[in-house]
Image 1 (cartoon, rainbow, N blue to C red):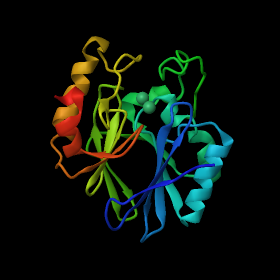
Image 2: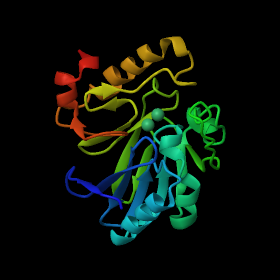
Image 3: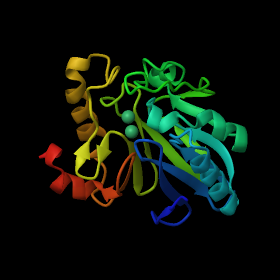
Amino acid sequence: MSDWTVHDVGPGVVIESTPVGFAEANCYIVGCPETKTAAVIDPGTTDRTELDAIVKRVGELKLTVRFIVNTHGHPDHLAGNDILKRKVGGEVLIHELDALKLTDPVRNASRMLGLDVRVAPADTFLDDGDVIEIGTVRLTVLHTPGHSVGQIALLGAGFVMTGDTLFAGSVGRTDLPCSSEENTIAYEVLMQSIGERLLTLSDDTIVLAGHGPTTTIGEERRNNPFLA
Ligand SMILES: [Zn+2]
Ligand SMILES: [Zn+2]
């Protein structure tokens, strides 16, 4: 049984999420109500019941999936790519610096967690500044390395999907393999990404994080202990 949270980020876009997989990563459906097209962000589960629930919800919303987007190359965000793609289609997108993590359980840290997660290569690589067009919904790719070298955030109108970079009251860990090109500076890279790419957004920007509850940039600027 999946519980879907409806995120009211404003008119012209449908966003719903449900936690999936061993790490309860938030899997998001982003839909354009006008064109009935959608993207699924971070289907990080191989559990058939959870994947069926995503397929079912996409169907209930009468959406056609155009894209499957991984905010970065960790198993809790990508494990369901292949199964979901077989069921609903869609082009798999990931930042090129995390592309090799899709097919390599050592690089994607699943081996370290006692798992063996590997999925098919991406269809298209993303880079900073790219715009993913889901009908009339535009998501701009912000490269935010630190937690993972190819981590991205997706900036929409009034909201930002931060993956594992920024959470309500916390920030992403930087001790995983390939967190950044230079692991020793990964934390500094993460904080630079947050400071330069996320905290520069307006206070009322809704933050849809890769794990945990929704927050806002202003709330995190004021109360996140890691940003003090
Ligand atoms: Zn991660
Ligand atoms: Zn995660």
